[in-house]
Amino acid sequence: MSYVKPAEFVQTMIDAGESKVFMSTRDTIIRGTMAGAILAIAVAVAITTAVQTGIPITGALVFPVGFVILNLMGFDLLTGVFALAPLALFEQRPGVTKTGVLRNWLLVALGNLIGAVSVAFLVALTFTMNFSMDPGAVGQVFIKASTARSLGFAEHGLNGWITVFVKGILCNWMVCLGVVGAMVSKSVSGKVLAMWFPIFIFFGLVFEHAVVNMYLFPLGMMLGAEFTIVDWLVWNQIPVTLGNLVGGLVFTGLALYATHGKTLPARNL
Image (cartoon, rainbow, N blue to C red):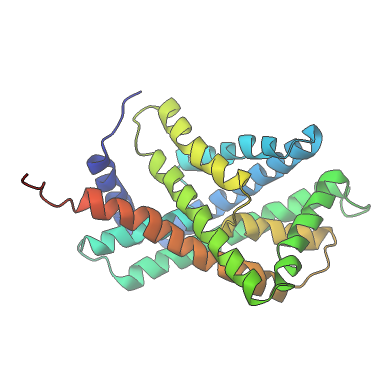
């Protein structure tokens, strides 16, 4: 496995951020849609694995397969572009503006939402025999999880909101390390390993991911969970998205850029 040095992959991150800012609207939405759909399928297989084995951590072991697939196919998650797109702005690449970065974020988010909700509907259909019966064990887990991660946090008020926000930070710190992981190796096997580990950490610790939640909560509601769209947005989606922005941009993108993209001269001893 051929390893790429940090100074090299940080330049790759900047180049990737620039290309995403200038990507056409059609391509940005398509790539976002496919990323949201594939990640949603990965959540379904992860929860199914955990239920079938009775060992929750097994879900975290298999979940990264979706992240690996969507990255190898060149699809985009909002959580990933939170870290990459701004780097081209910081590097002052010609034509890259704040508006362009925000446009990229919004279009990717729209695509992710379309893909995640579409798969939620299809999965809900399969869990309920075309909505003609109650969901089984796996569906019940989705109902319980979506309720706990909305109304459960709402019960704690501001403390719940802050907790979700911090879970979002920690999540996207790991997720964006997975995005960068795909750049540290030139071989497919090396990319897969480098992506797998940080994604396993975030899922295993039950941190909060904006795109995963674009699937989890609509699916929960389709299966009969008793919370509202406002509950989902206020007590999860909004703080998680803000936390993901901080975690991806500050903890991963800016940290790597500051020390490998803008390295200071070595000290004279």
